[in-house]
Length: 252
Image 1 (cartoon, one colour):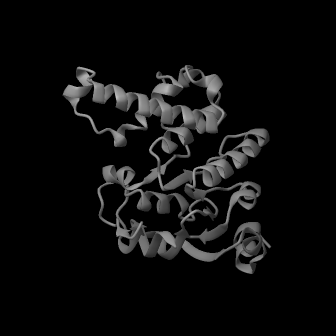
Image 2: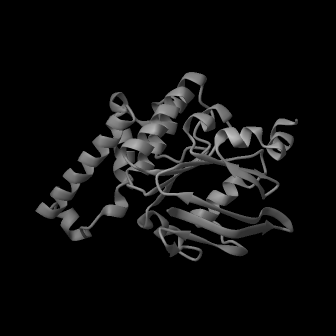
Image 3: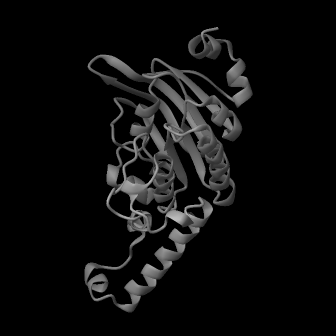
């Protein structure tokens, strides 16, 4: 069953086709990766799905709902969360505070209840902290819980951003180049964490990634793009052996 379906998506910038007539679907429960060189349209697709950009043509359906014109601020409420290639965290806040911020879409109390810290607000805060602690345990961030983001190594910051996205309890998690800037050991740890997120939480993952080893280890299916156009969709093995993919990406 498709959780996300994009149909004939196109977007141009000043006459340049960033994405051209791209159609694909992501099934519930899978890890679906998008590969391609710089300028292939990978991040543009993410920006279309998360509604940062409006498509010039085509449609996007998520969980059987057309989200092509849904305002950006409502995307998280619908069940889509994303990370960015360059981390977007509150540098002077702790890891815990950054993750609690990720719970904002689930707030059901009003300002007065929170200001007076009424029983409903206290119960909500306890639930949020329990959920955040579960994410901290899942991604092995216990040691960093009370540390300020600005003092953390880059690899840990990347994982905190993934954790904050998970605190939104998404049905679909968009990972934009999660291994960028990581060393080989951190990338290997990331592969296990992606598997845990997918299998233990049941979260569907759509990932843009340049590291083919990571893609091969974690992905159910892979889509290859070049110059904004879809080249092929298939298993990691099929994509690595596809003649057009070899020609476009591997120079063979």
